[in-house]
Image: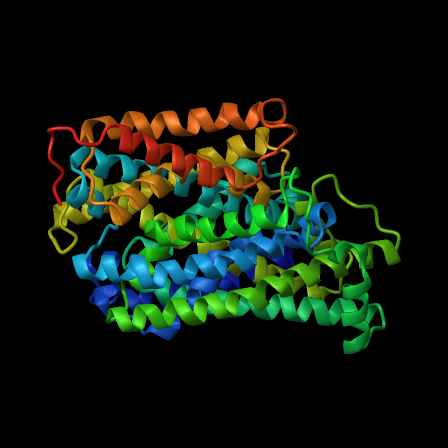
Length: 485
């Protein structure tokens, strides 16, 4: 595929996004940016959240990861269903009852000022890292498909990519994203399905033959029952439930979309259909992963060093031009459907939680501050991507969940303590507890084989992190300092 074709596809795609941004930003005010004026149709939110949840991680990294861990990732996907049930029936009713814009303001009502700021701070850290890792994928594809041909360095690719996101999100924010995510989810799912069809066609496989190849492949091994390894079924399933709770239910990015629905009833409908759809969608991408490895083996194609590079390499260098274009549309849609909403959520959290600005304030001065914050987070994501490119050797899907175990753990402990107990805790001690918990988890994970009879932590380290935070809050309970709730 020539660089000109790559550029044409990307340019056309962004022209459509900018057009949507123009249409949705007319008569937009501050409330449009932060809450979508509470007028988003639930079915659009549900469909768009699929793309935001999956992102480039699922589109590229999950198929590639099949070569490392087979279908074991699906064990965690099954656990997601439990987590989404908790979100719909515990967290969403709480958020709607309190009429929250930032979900972390709940912590101020329940515990106090320092708890509130701690929760918001850990979200900012979590989402900056997560968004950066996801955007790293699409920047890498653009580098391979276009920028390398002209000797343009990777940092220019990253800067260009982030700048394009800023252009179509800085005016109407979440109001625009509800619509762009819908379009991008469609492209992502269509690309995966068409890619499977085209690969099967080149391998001369019928529908039943394709299913048989996937089912009989050693790469489709699903369950792992050895309790000592990191991807044991019970570890993965339970971790999946908690990962869904923290990375969706305790994440301003994902919840901001839910809170744009007209009512709690609509928001719960959104979560129901979103969770039902997510299971077969993940199975689709895992199946694609098996076919990619079968294709490479069939045609004697050497595998890349990084599993994340397998799908881009085949699509851009070995597939037909049409298949390559389909791939480009899919990865661009998948990556940006996550990154654009993350950038808006980061801006919302910082403006509301740290600057204390009323989201309905439409003054010119406030709009200027919002735009500065929006640009600032864009630059911060740019820097994190460059660091990730220099130091990380894991697949992105593995790196995302590893980081989540450390950064979302304190949020899990804080919200669990607030919702499931009525105990007061020392508000000023919360930042220290939240910082110590990930540090203790790091050392526990590092020496677990020696300390715990060969036990290796997987993503369930998130639960341990939340539990340590919960215990820390309990140890400081009963203090004379009163909680605000």
